[in-house]
Image 1 (tube, rainbow, N blue to C red):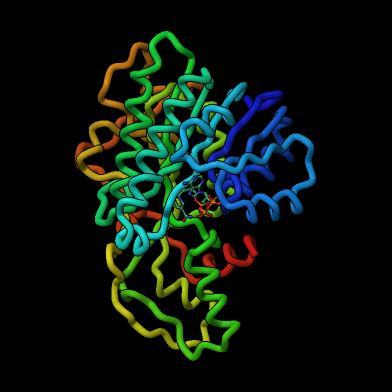
Image 2 (cartoon, rainbow, N blue to C red):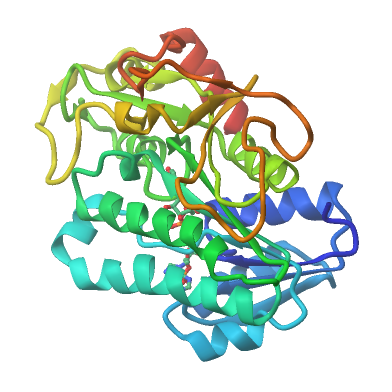
Length: 331
Ligand SMILES: NC(=O)c1ccc[n+]([C@@H]2O[C@H](COP(=O)([O-])OP(=O)(O)OC[C@H]3O[C@@H](n4cnc5c(N)ncnc54)[C@H](OP(=O)(O)O)[C@@H]3O)[C@@H](O)[C@H]2O)c1
């Protein structure tokens, strides 16, 4: 799938982008990987960390269509990971979040079609499924744009799909580095927003592998959702520092008690495969696809009409010991 291909990753200098680049270089023999993001320091640091002649560092903003067009020349595969992702920052700066997550998504789509890119996967989040905050709402709009983009391709070869998953353990700005920092500073307690709060959890490596697999599975128009475990935030705190008391600090603006990946509203569009779910489009595209099978031929089955995939009713929860093991593995 990736051998000798030219790949562009928006947000390539972020937590996900760096992990994906490492994996692609190690296992998939790409011809070239274009790293596309704004901050030159992140490019500089990444260039120091990854000494590989196949990497191209493009400083650029997804809000800048012209720059995207330039970076996208000759590209076969695009992973769109660039985003504003902090819930409370998006609440406070809504138009900035809209410009990056919505206008940026639209620019990426237009540039992919113009440059006849073959396949595109955009990253989404559980916060998009039933959004309670602006970040989630912008990602839902982005998901809709990427699904509907398959309608704009005409006779072109470009196909778009979305991958949606939950909290990435250890990613920049996530709860693990936050707790680690408190511990280094000799905190006498860990702050917890709500004792019942639950989250879906995935490692960066699992997230990257799921996106990579998505390219082989996609027809175009799907939202792919991996089957992943849930945790309670209290268990997460216990796994990191069993000796420390926790203090309830209250839910922050825009935060939810539990996260949904698939709501009942989407159940009638959802197929279950062995390790994942696929929400299929309602729009008919110019190309025909049998969404009951993925592009590899694996057969999915329709879920029940009242099916929901929500972090507090997930069949698979990690206990404190398992969370500790997961933390150990990624650190
Ligand atoms: N982390 C999670 O828990 C999680 C969970 C589910 C889904 N996701 C999704 O996964 C994707 C990647 O997340 P991440 O954890 O890797 O985030 P991250 O570490 O914050 O990385 C974000 C990347 O996007 C770039 N970026 C931000 N605004 C940009 C813009 N306007 N133009 C170009 N590049 C821009 C950043 O670099 P510059 O700032 O230098 O431009 C950085 O390279 C996001 O779409 C996010 O919504 C994340």
